[in-house]
Image 1 (cartoon, helix red, strand yellow):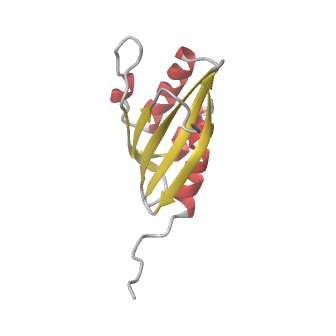
Image 2 (image 1 turned 90 degrees about the vertical axis):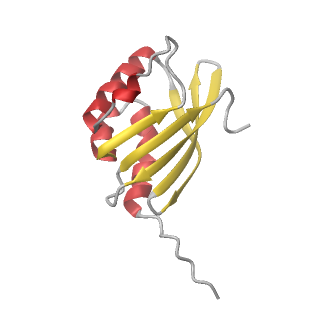
Length: 132
């Protein structure tokens, strides 16, 4: 019999993942609690003007400012969770983003630190709902 050596999901990582979209839905100050000291986020897309302002994020405070800016540029956006998983120090979140009648989806892949805070996140958005 082979013993499973996969780390059990941590309660702290689960709590962080459960609050990730709350942060994205307007409570940007949560980034101070959810993001590790060496936090980085990597988006696969650019802004409409071709810029990549998230590339400069190097701390939770930077992310708080970015989220405030982002919501100013994208008013009325609401994120909803479609599915998620936490496996030890890794997590995945499938999400939909809705504004008006438009719904698009995406996936975030997260690495957690030992305290369950997000160290790295890779975020990719698509052209249709993840519920499709």
